[in-house]
Length: 432
Image (cartoon, rainbow, N blue to C red; front, side, top):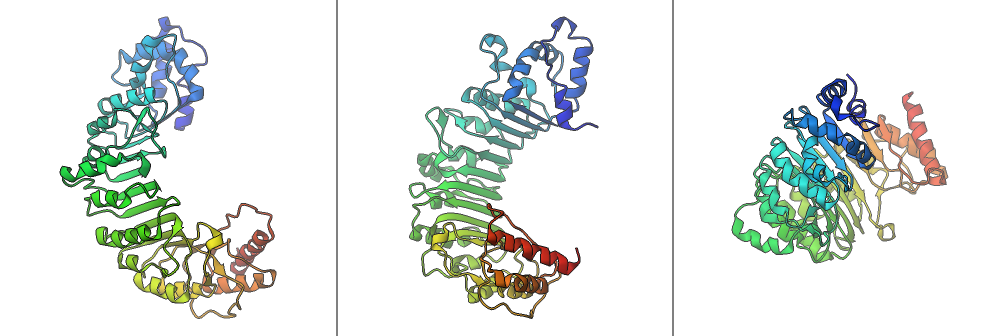
């Protein structure tokens, strides 16, 4: 069976159709293709073809409940979907591309197109589970009430504009099946935070929360207090510059108290936890079920004693990423020998991203060894020419099945070339 892309290529004609033949071969060809489409993506370059075919589409739609009966995923990425010279066959006909089995809808369009889709989606796609919009048109937040089965909502634009709405939390939080939520915090209607107090428990089914563009004037803690779900497992926070050290400490203290069963915690901040904050920060070590920790903040002090505390707090850790958002404020780095600590005390670790200190003397032998595969994203660590072979030998002794990931922008820099040699030596040691 051809892929959806091949099927979609046969949907839109390159020349205007003769609607008098709508019941003939042209209609049969279109319906045959459309009935097999599972994923439909409409972009700006498709608009002219759609306009040419619109008469035929309208004719077929008048005789069929849906032109796309098996459509599961709809992606509309354009500004306009109508011919201004023919307004009678314009915006009201967006439902031509909706199907009763549609589960996922992504909309990146002008506010007129977004308005029409938000009105028509709940009626035409009662099984819709995931909705992603760039913005909500002004006055249309209330439409979200109609998405009773919605499990995932994402609003991608960082800031609202005059013709777009802020997110009304009581409405969004009352959706009974909402499991996954992604928002830019400035898009939230600040006044609705206070209104939420009288609405009882909100976001009671939430499992994953992603908040971006967090700034000092937006109430991150107030938002987190609204989460009524006992099942929140994943929390992703992206904090802009300007959020002070005290505010960050309050967040760190609040998270384990509110979400004790958290499994994934990611904090990306241009700020700092403060110069006296040990790593890992003491409050979050209470998260006993943590499996994935990603911290990108300034001034992280990576000590061997801190590595031991980390291993004691989360012996089942699968993913560890520790970095500095601004290398000008980078504090101490872990010695390369910390790999032995992780090989011995974190047997389930699958991924490590950290800057390691390769300038110190590198041990000739390893006291701990793990045969399990691991991805090491340590290519941003400084590495001098004299330590290339010793570094490769040591890593191979500790993690013989390690895969070294290199994502340096300047792939021709001397530093990068040294890590490329380390990667090649590791493969040679394994006999790859």
